[in-house]
Length: 425
Image (cartoon, rainbow, N blue to C red; front, side, top):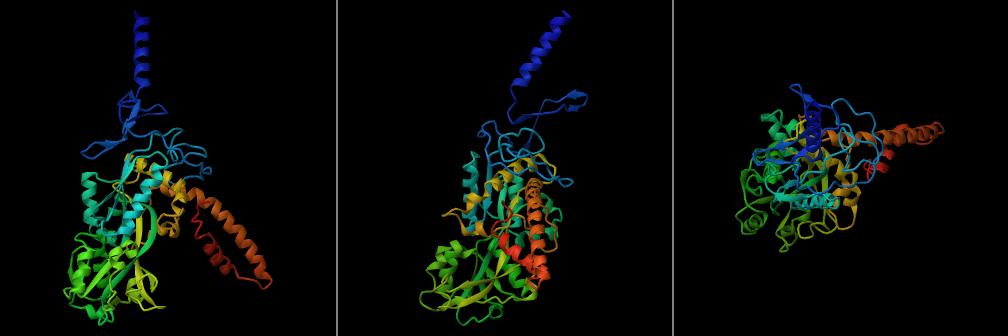
């Protein structure tokens, strides 16, 4: 009888161990809870019950990555070269990569295009994803966290910086995955507007309500000490109102894909208002120039206009360090990083070629952490990149001893040589 009971118990154990419950992952080491061994673990989030789905596609395969350097304290460990599914985190095997959604602001057409291409790159690895549009302003991201609509978002960091003032834990809940290329801010007005100061008290369109353009515009004018009367409407409506004399200026963010702006100003009545670089802008924005070839209807031939660019970033939504959700999104981030070079192919958005994945987020008055798995991926590549830098500097210093370039010159040259590599090799 005893032998029968033991056999029945073992058979039951084997049957339970053979098939995972939906959304569950088999532990690869003994785990005990309340004195009982736990066989499975999983991750859920939100009232909709989104999780590692049993309908998820098969594990993605990505190019092999070099062996990881020692992980920093608190970082998630990455598997050695040859691991599957975009770098399993903290174990010999990994769960299939979870289906995901990435959010972009509908008023920022460049960000929307990059979101679609993010989905395409991971889709080529067998990962199910979708790009959705919605507000990526702090209030919009907060709604997404409550409703579990998206996992990633392409955001303007100047707008997220606003939230830190009121919610200090915001950076921990929305960690950085990767900095993106900054997007230009363009101010279109009639030619009698010589500077932004001339718009004081005037009607200026800030884009869609609750959009990132509005927040960036509000911060820009605030830092320059210019008070305007903002209005909110889609770009096409704003340009029509400007042409009809109902608006004095229109602010456009990420206008590279804004085709409504391409054909505007052919009658010669309007131009881009210059935004000269000044100290109040240094902590948030980057200097930029727009050439006549980009805006032939708004800039005189062979001329350029000074403006500023807002910092952009890819962030993970509601993924605090150490949470199961951070692990799940970290696997997706590593899968994307491992296949990042596919974003540089013809037909993709040109912004991908201007990104340094190893750069930190430039957010004023905030220490913005990076998603642990993304930081681990960067740290692995930094180990080899630093060795190359040391060798390069040694050679340059030797040349400097004979009257050649100085050591600091070698650093600048090396930075320029590696800018486009973005630590990907």
